[in-house]
Length: 270
Ligand SMILES: Nc1ncnc2c1ncn2[C@@H]1O[C@H](COP(=O)(O)OP(=O)(O)OP(=O)(O)O)[C@@H](O)[C@H]1O
Ligand SMILES: [Mg+2]
Image (cartoon, rainbow, N blue to C red; front, side):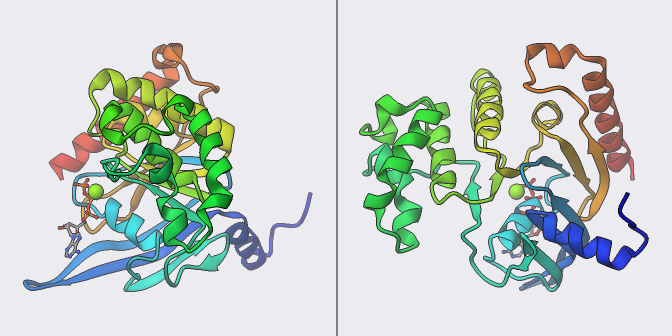
């Protein structure tokens, strides 16, 4: 057994190992009505290849956290690291999938996937094969030359996921990616995402308001407090993969769901 008693060294090596680490982050927005604390003392991390679901009440700072990780805004204090390196501006290790697919209607599916590549100044021709192979992974190979309006909501969101992965990020950030979909499409997208994640082995930070979706997908669930957001609970999801329809009747699934419902019930009473 290696000696772990030198806690300082141990901490550093753990930080280096995490794909994403958020360390004691505070974020205060300056608004016309004065300062607004969105996050206060938020710490969490995502290990390489780990799927972490982030649950928290509306307005607790989840989307703010994503803006911080992409380097769009900077924390008031604290540090965000990607693979151990502090984020100090836009970073290519990160891919994002939003609630709405936000595809450009005048571009084909293939061209839409290549949009971030052009924005990064990379030759899109070189990434064409990557885009086509991602479309294959998304079960959309036949739709490369279709326009977004010819696709269903679930298909458009899969294009959104392919676009988030096109530059081969190590961390995929997803902000309620299935919230705009109908319940049945949402269930099949959850399965799709599990399959895509198992195939690509990305680190994922997945924001959702759905307790069952969070359990079904995650290795670990982080629950944030009401604003100003900080991590309240860290729950490991000890369920075998791939998760299937049977997973939902596993007693461990029900017990986690109950635990999470109680946490949110208590938060509402507070
Ligand atoms: N650009 C901004 N300027 C000022 N205040 C902001 C800004 N963006 C967000 N806020 C405020 O910060 C808080 C956190 O917002 P955020 O969008 O991060 O919450 P959220 O957890 O994503 O909520 P939801 O679950 O509803 O999407 C809210 O009170 C919001 O009004
Ligand atoms: Mg949000």
